[in-house]
Length: 185
Image 1 (tube, one colour):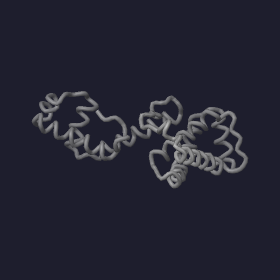
Image 2 (image 1 turned 90 degrees about the vertical axis):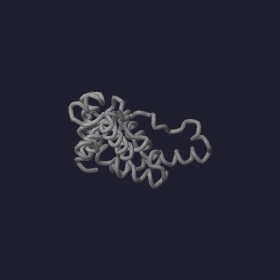
Image 3 (image 1 turned 180 degrees about the horizontal axis):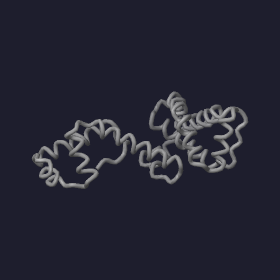
Image 4 (image 1 turned 180 degrees about the vertical axis):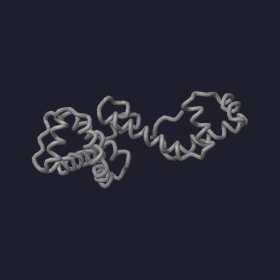
């Protein structure tokens, strides 16, 4: 294990959010791919890896990693995937289905805060990619809280055109984020 990994583990043990965020940022993508390769379901893979990171946070003071950090993390995710597959194969997985209603982003853990920040950034990027007129109308409604009639009056367009722009923006965001995405206004 190199010095960077040792410092990261020390940061985790000390409860520093920055260490946890770095751990998540660096290792989440490869661990999610490992899980996806094993369980063949993206939502389940993401849930397994997120739950594992939450578990790491819970046991951070007791972490004892002998060899490589990535090997330790990969082994943990691998074992959780095996448990999921065994459970699903035996029918036990049906007693507690994984649910998109499990809102880790609302969690007050470093993982929850990090996920909420990333989701907010993705949403801002998606809104920024909207056509200018649609973006303007959508932000007036979403950010400024203006009603359709107020937007129409301020922009000089009809209420139906306002409705069209908002419908267009919401359709684009739903397509981009899917049914398991963030709640849309």
